[in-house]
Image (tube, rainbow, N blue to C red; front, side, top):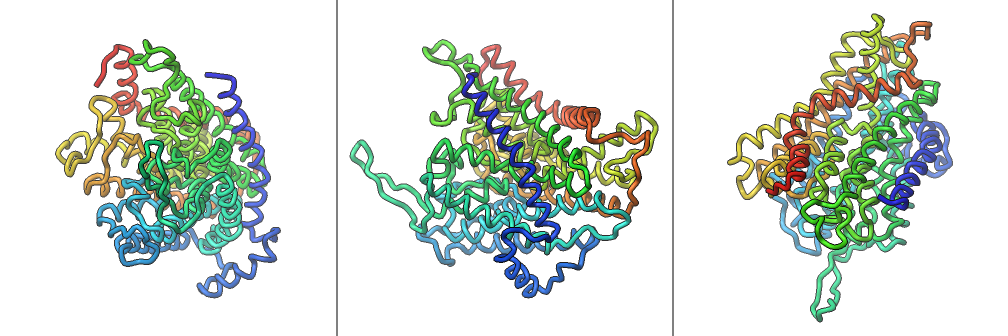
Length: 571
């Protein structure tokens, strides 16, 4: 651990915190339909889209209408992406002449990108055509990210309104987010990445001479446009197989830093949107502070663990810190920071191999995902996930003092608590259920050459991480699991479906119930949700519920591996 490493972490935290309020103000104006500096250019385009689709932007929807619109839109996106992948051999922009993607891999990939998971059981540069990358994956990167932001704003509206029967219009929200937020930022972002040396071309590859006198074929393609939205939209799916460790996907230290900041930018800003929309910015700051403490604790543990020398290599000259699986140009600090960021958000991009992390270093990204990725989280998903835990926290506080729990001026009753617990518990059920299935039936997990590449607790961690990543809609992997087989592609795809939509629908039901309630004026007995007491309670509830749920599984994986390493036991 060095002062330079800590400086990188500190600068990152400061920049994200500084961006939260101005970006939050802009997002608030966009979602309210107010005039912005882009309105003169984009307002006619927005109006034309509504006219073509037959949408009345002023007509709002109930939570059921909002949910049905969201589900229908995502079902159509899944069907379109599945068709593109299965038919890519007859579609244009396929200079590599790639064949169709197998049915189970197409199912997994389509489900992955529609749910904002972006898990990849394939190597992008050896499997997908330029058309599949652009018209399939990149388009879904925009749409799945916009869906998450729209859902978060709809949930915020529920708390901001009183006796309301509507929470917004899904089609209006989706259009405004893409037009005014994601597209403008990504255009400038992609140009910046090109300036750093990232390719943006329709050429398939380039030939280069090697130092040995041979020739190497280097894959190329429209990389910058996909990387911009994969980071800003916390998607994470890489154009290349090694993702952000590839020099064409992460060419410089500056590009690496900007990519890390962009992963957190919108998620952090949405906490400010909450504060502005409910009329008390302190509420948003309290949530961002709680997220920040959890994030700093995680990155500190990961950095410390990776700064230790592996005991198996400790006798070698110069062995100081774990550099296995890391790019020398990034080093330990930037690799540990990237891993903590990408799993605190539902991004899944990686600039190092998590499979090569020390046991406790690998535990951090794994536990980040298992907490529901509410530490900033995916764009939108992190905020509404945290709000569900906030409801749980005030419920616990209400039990302590014998009062009906309230949050942001709304009383929380039995119906809301049942729906909240349903939303919170569906992800752990998918993670632990599918991991148990894979562990208990070796002939299924190993069929077709699939399954973990390591024995012992690390092999278990690879399976646990895969289902955590899928159900948590993260998409990163330990990179030691062979997953491109029918069993893994199908079960991981189902876990993605559960982790996304089985959480969203009850969350929207909570939003509908809360929106219909009247605002309750604060009294002497009201539990303040903007101060240190709520801050500590929320963090405690998150850690205790996460620990009780996942500690037995973690004890079989990274914790057992850590103690085995201390004994010098290898697998």
